[in-house]
Amino acid sequence: MVISQQLLVDATNIGCSYRNGQTDVVALESATCKIKPGDKIALVGPSGSGKSTLLQILGGLEIPTKGSITWPLLGERNVLRPVHISFIFQMPSLLAPLSVIENVEIPLLLNNVEANKARAEAMNALERLEMHRLANKLPEELSGGQAQRVAVARALAGKPKLILADEPTGQLDHPTANFMMDTLLSNINESGAAIVVATHDSEVAKRFDSKWHMHRGRLEEEDI
Ligand SMILES: Nc1ncnc2c1ncn2[C@@H]1O[C@H](COP(=O)(O)OP(=O)(O)OP(=O)(O)O)[C@@H](O)[C@H]1O
Ligand SMILES: [Mg+2]
Image (cartoon, rainbow, N blue to C red; front, side, top):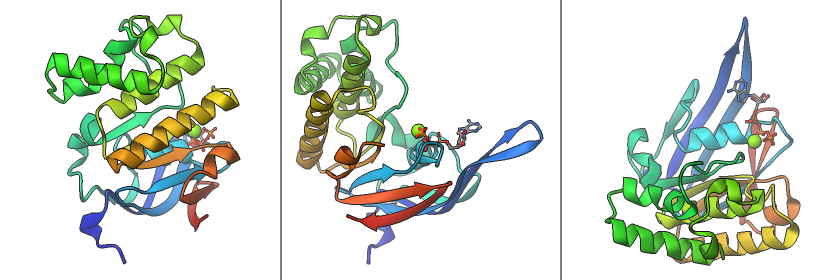
């Protein structure tokens, strides 16, 4: 039995619908879930089943239209990002006018880390992803897969307590996807962070301790 105060995320019967003209589109029907420090969770389910919507609610980017969600170990919604929770998005998410290294150091600077230290930590994160040679490039000069690796470096740089990754390997070939998952998982083992990864790739899902299934907007949990 897990005591609520020891949880990173405690969500009960959360749901989310969007108004589309005269009708409501239900993106998330119902999800009840808990995330503890160090949890490694794969979130699987068909396209449109609500994975991205759930991740956005878990990270406080989206407010659920029903149910309740709290972050007992982290605090209120307004302090979650960029300090405690970091995202790796499904879509390209680097800021176009900033160089690779500037993109990676943003969460650190927003967290008031001193500029020299932020630069060093950002470079260290890029090295872990073997992207340091591209530190001064602009996002438009990168391939989709390289940009995704930079997004992973940015997510790791601030040493968050929880990483929410939305199909982080979707644009990568298998060797690069494996390398990225190795890097993500070894960093997480070191830092004790929890991670939830939405993925369509069963090879990726296999590497996680538990698997959450989404089906038509509903979440079911299952231990692998
Ligand atoms: N902002 C929005 N406005 C209206 N409908 C939305 C919005 N976001 C998501 N939806 C709808 O909610 C449902 C769930 O979408 P979601 O993006 O969460 O699915 P997903 O499981 O992440 O799919 P995929 O595997 O394709 O990324 C879909 O039917 C989608 O069209
Ligand atoms: Mg999605």
